[in-house]
Image (cartoon, rainbow, N blue to C red; front, top):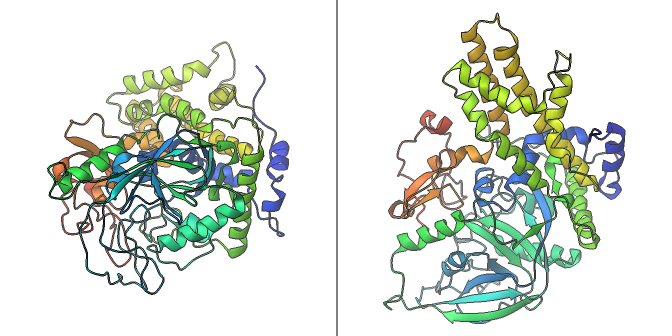
Length: 535
């Protein structure tokens, strides 16, 4: 079978086909940047529209044109039965909308023409104006309404990855404020202003809205009269009604449970991502360093220049336009990442934690013998390592410039996996005279270091929880420090009040460096001092 590797010259030429997304000084997406950021691009693809990985890698740097098929049902919680006349939110899960299907006793518009954030599909917390919460009028409790809508046609949207509905100053909204909207100093709380400006972009790009994520995926939908049919708008029970869910703990737990049911998929093909039109800041040779030295693993856009951001913004516009005009089916790059993680996600930890050199040797041989032709005289195993790298690309025929950048990123990640495994094999298989103890420790360290580079979300999963528990990962605004570093099965009675992981301006100081016991899957000490009082 001929090799599926692309020549470097052909890839460079194709990637530079994004002519309108290249600056006069030549700044643009490059194969070198895609290869360098291969694990991050791999994770962006693997976790796209998946709650769990998107919560762990919450500073998303990628955007995907997408379609919500005709017939998909969506939900909205509001005070009245009235169809929204302005940009507003839609939820994919009933519990997400039900949490807001009530009167908050506060009008959306203030007397000064600005917005209250009483509709928490855009934000759960109160809006801050110049760092201070707005002064609300007196609250009047009354039931709200649950709206159910159906897509009357395919809805064109842009998916913003990561925890992109998280109102933090940790970088969760960098791709919206800094990249798309050219705002470097907007308060995270100004979500109605953010939505209004995003919808101005949507009108320019001829799309219907934007998908973001908090505990559950939501859509900033720009015009409820275009593309949607209201199926129902039913009043919720009074607080005193026996049909009301009176336990806030149960309400929050069921919302978290609904989100957890989308940890691995949005379900039922409700969102179709165009991976072949993906735009990622990781494609570019730009500075994504986090100015917070305590969180170097979280990428930020704050160091990118205005000209670099302009180029990326144009790339988004071009990708959206091409996606909507292209008739061909996009490549399922998430499927490629799924095949790779399925092969290695459970086996790499077994090698890194092997209790004996015999187990480690057998596991390495099991993984690599597929690619080794023992009739070859190549003692360097170069050809075998190449076959290992290319194994899951055999069905792939890259077509778009983005496909080629993605190919380079995933190939570099696969090459790192195969190189580490062949290095481990060299240590424990190829040298019979080696000191077994030293070789055993060195091989385990090689694979452990690989895992640190890959940072796959599978290694944080809880396993099966009891019916009154949920595998709980920090999802803004929910979650403590230990819930981010060490997700675990939590009972419904302890979900409420957890929120000290997130750094929220004017509200909570947010994440502190994890105590040593939080790292490497160890349990974390209880930390009750900074509960999320909004919830």
